[in-house]
Amino acid sequence: MILAAYHGTRPGLPGLYNRAVRIVGRGPYSHVELAFAEREAVERGEPVESWSASWMDGGVRCKSISFDPSRWHFYELPWADAAQARQWFLTHDGEPYDLAGNLRFVLPIIPDSRRGWFCSEAIAAALGWSEPWRYEPNHIVTICRDMRI
Image 1 (cartoon, rainbow, N blue to C red):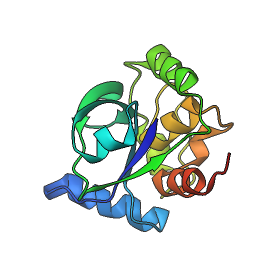
Image 2: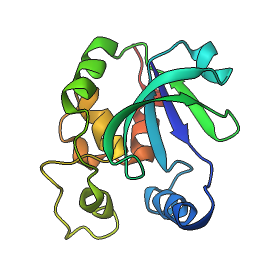
Image 3: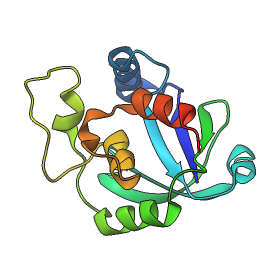
Image 4: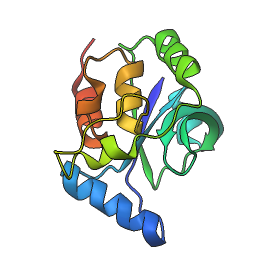
């Protein structure tokens, strides 16, 4: 299982959002995905099963993604339970995107949604972390990158 972290910038309004997430998170990443594939396949840009939560896709979803290595960084998660993570996503597939929870990083007075998920929150939950609403993409990457078996 691979954590894919987006460091590119989309055109238009989505690009402004990419920049805002990076500024608030004080890091290079604005979105994360869990890819259920071998690192080599991901790095070659082959289409792979990828799970996350996305505003543009309407919430928690699976899609086949051919990652462009010039826009994504990849982190192996040998310590993670891939079956548990996939099961979490299968259970929550189709649940809405948590825009309010995501905006909470900028405006802390906004409450977290009890029924939706943003990308890093969904991944933290799938990995079995407590209080997954606390994590934005740069937090997830830092923790996963520095984890040791």
